[in-house]
Image (tube, rainbow, N blue to C red; front, side, top):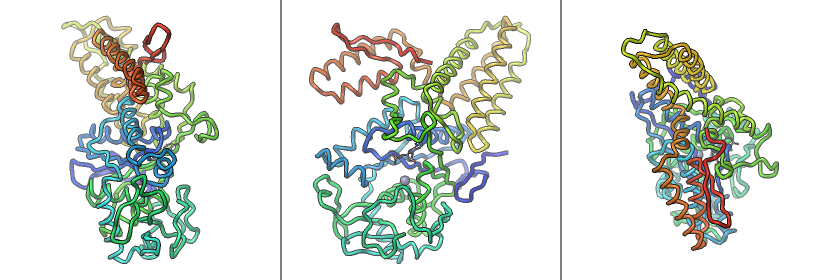
Length: 480
Ligand code: AMP
Ligand code: ZN
């Protein structure tokens, strides 16, 4: 059985074959960089990473693009309030989401397109939709998509058009539309937009892009007219992704994305995460508390993406233990005595079974909890075997180690866990150097730089304590 995904587009499990053999193109909707990303966002970004790693593990050459939304209602409002330009306001958040992604072991992508760098592509798209009679202009310089001209509208979300646009993310400033269900491709300039750098000249007046348009333009120009996979959180199905389809397919006449995968929203201590409920947690906060990156990674990937995942402090403890067991196991296996005349054992069979069972689970719509179970069954059985086997044949041991490393190419738990465990001489020197750099930054009152260094250290499992005698460091007690 090959790899299957539950495709939101058809609401059924479908076998995944990329359009061009051996290669896959993926677009994931990225963060709106108006604040620090929260752990819910990171459930989604870690899921993207899992898709990326798993497809690469299966031998595909993956082109993965995740955008950064640096112009939309929220970023403009926040930049105006802070008295900064959009780029001044969003840059630190764009940097921090990538830094935190690194810390959690999310593979670096080739491209993180920022919406503001794709204005000409967006204008092309709007022009094309106007030309094709799928969009219309209004007096204030806005351009709207005419959804009555795109009969397939609603095919992703199964939305009943007569019921109107009831999505959570509908913006409130779409005035002048022919039909309440139409959405803005381009928005006429508003007071203050120009000052923050959120207004561009266009053939239909000054204005700025609508959020949906941004993703279509970036996906099409970075990855081509038909993507293999388009990913996002479940809140984006409607209207965001529905609108991306209408725009992209309206402009190209070709299917936009063949597979759509949507991640269920993370809950925190059993509740929907929100600032008002007081359970809004950022990754940055957890790192500053000294929680290990590997534990965060483990907890956030531990459930299959369409299933509920409830983030809890207790769960985090469990995750920390799980990563610790993995690291111990690897160390034990690597250090187990070998002998040329050692009798053969069932270790090769256990190793093969681990790969087969892991692949079976992951092929089944990325059932990562099954994948993790396969890994831990391997760990338990091998531990039992090592208890009873004073020495192994070297080839058996190496094969088992290779299997462990191979599964970790997908899971990334040892990869992230190692960084915290390896506090050796070179690392100590590096820590001291970073602390000095931070002290310098603080004396220059460059709080952002000082903060970034603290976070960088936290990412390696190092917590700082500032006292009267200077700054001391220690390895986080929660480390793997
Ligand atoms: P945003 O920065 O709000 O545009 O979101 C960036 C990504 O995170 C999108 O794919 C969202 O669907 C996703 N997302 C937002 N909130 C959550 C949550 N609580 N759990 C999982 N994913 C989320
Ligand atoms: Zn998007």
